Length: 328
Image (tube, rainbow, N blue to C red; front, side):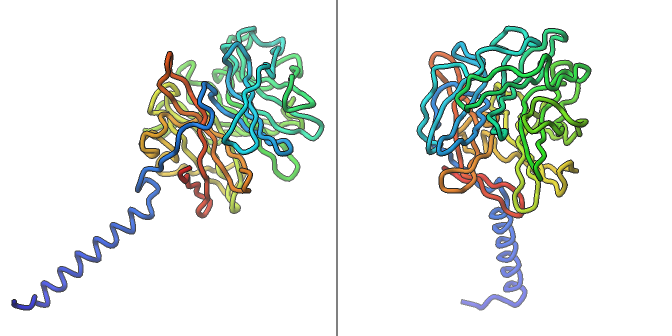
């Protein structure tokens, strides 16, 4: 057979180089392949899971249900869970409407003298969802409301929901979302200094980011902040919580108050998880028994009799500060 000419050899070489570059691009892209997550670790309705470790026990708390304001479960390995029978927040603050269906997204942490629970409830005076605080000597509760009014309640911005905690250099901060989607306003994630027990604010709130990406729809919410590799990593959920479009994003910053730069695409979505979890969100980050980071989140299950949000977990790594979800 005739030998290819020099021009043909060059053309073939260029084709091979181009294919190699494309392959490298796919390998480097976080959206190159779907990450499969096995079935839920807690297969029952338990949305917006928040995790705190006390001793060797992990305590999980969730949005209202089963006749409780705040649900509670325990585990020693983040895989096998026991659901508690008691409501860890049996009474709301006097500022809140006695409506258990409006109690959302609890946050619990050790405060040095016991435990603080921050929760969302409906404010009697304004009719908006706002954030309150409660205290208990034990992570098992019961938590007793602290203060005569809500902790954060920016009525003019639609109220506040989705409390989350972050500490650095001995200072504690509260992250929260302005609930602007209740009334055709922007939804901002905020950072605000609070007392060590989280029952009062100690300075003004700083806006970190809002919805501005097509995949986010009209909502960003559920902030979770960690620091890894010298970078601040702000996780958040976005889009409508009740469907497959709900997803988890992230943003990076070199300074606590930002500016935060969002990732190019969601960290976790129905598509990126290959449909093994639908509408992944309400996330929290926790260190597992092996000392490695885990991301814990909810996703929709079909029922019967009704759809519900079960709890999932996956491995979490960081590449130059950028989070990477690994299959579980």
